[in-house]
Amino acid sequence: MLEVFNIIINPEILLSLVVLCLVLHGIRLPILKLSVIVLFLIGIITGFNLAGLDSFETITIIKYSYITNGLLDTNNWIIISKFIIIIGSISILLMGISETILIKSYQYFSLLILILTLGALLLVSSINWLSIYLVIELQTLILFILTALKRDSAYGTEAALKYFILGALSSSLFLFGCGLLYGLVGETSVQGINSILTIDVGKILITISLLFKLAAAPFHMWAPDVYEGAPTIITALLATVPKVGIFSILVQIGPVINVILISAVLSIIYGAIGALNQTKIKRLLAYSGIGHMGFILLGVAIDTFESIQASLIYIIIYIIITICSFTIILSLNLTKNLIIEISGLSGDNPVIAATLALTLFSVAGIPPLAGFLSKLLILLSGVLNGYYLITIIAVISSVIAGVYYVRLVHLIYFPINYSILIWQNILIKQRNINLSKSILIGITFYIILFLIITPNFLLQISHNAVISLY
Image 1 (cartoon, rainbow, N blue to C red):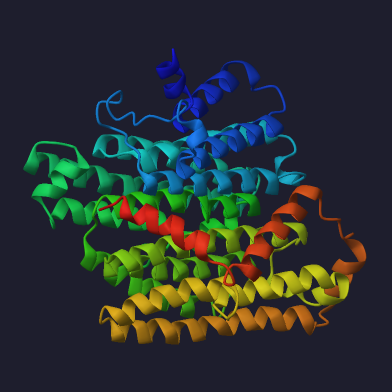
Image 2 (image 1 turned 180 degrees about the vertical axis):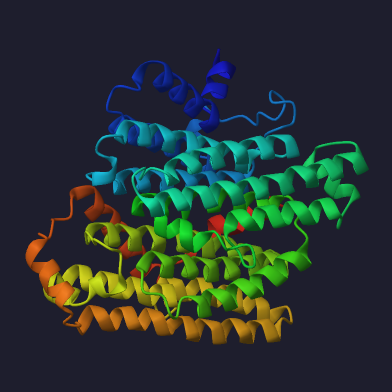
């Protein structure tokens, strides 16, 4: 009986049962609070499993690779990835409260977020090419639906169509690569293939497919248009939860390092230059995300213990900063998502203006904020391992990227008196920030400000996670 209970409280199995019950019986009920509670409980279970508390020796989450016929497994890397995914999903649900686009379909939105979270949890646990492919398809299908949430918008339809077509191309490359590997080796186990092959055409195709999902250059062409056309809450989702799952599995499968390195350098350069002439804030954040993915991939490409730990720390801080910035953007109630709409924010709401300005400085990597710590660790890994030229390129690109972040801060504190902004301030009422958004902004902003003072906990859990990969 205890063994059955231990199986049921595994995060994937528990969430699968909840999703199944909601699909069968609860689809017509408001399930937002239930979704948050379920994810919160799953996060607690994952946290206990990560901490390994002695008081929970009799209720431990077992390694269930044997009951899934070797398709799924668990270790510290997988557990910390799950924890990040759960935190991101809870943040998206709380962020979407009172959003106009979700009022009529919030119960469906919550259910889709639960399914997406389930897919991400299964993805990071997968150790077989078949399970990886199936879970990526489940995750991608949910993102297709959510991207097309604005049915009456031409931009929304265009974004969904582009995401669908390029997502299908990415899936085709992945499946073709899996077929080549199976034809050459005769098995579908990730570890079994890695023990025989290091570089192969199949692994190159799979690596490129995952780079599509991460919106890394030169496979980034869908990101700016999809970010712009999708509702802002869905843009925040695209920038957080799916990327954690893809990054986690990319590290575990042993990607082709040369492909990753080229993509990292191109992403860093293109992310910095591409955002300089943007006028819409979501497109700017899309290019910013491309640049950040470049730094994360650089740590993966260096392929040492310290560099992979730096990449894990970077993506954790990136998720925190992204949640904070998108929550503030949603709270501002922008009509056209233009950059000039934040002009003069310091006069309307000084607290939010200061929070957004410091968050942007953190994204730019200005000390002593959290973003500086993440970039510092990646650059140190590059210098210590002899990647001097790439490190110099990364530093120069960071300086270039800082230009458009400083431009945003300049708009916040030095307003531009365009007539459209004057009429907008007169005709559109500023809405108050609700409790859930205030909590999200407060927690994430606190971490952004004070993480660099006591980073020991983050360094310790990332160290334990990376050890489990070896």
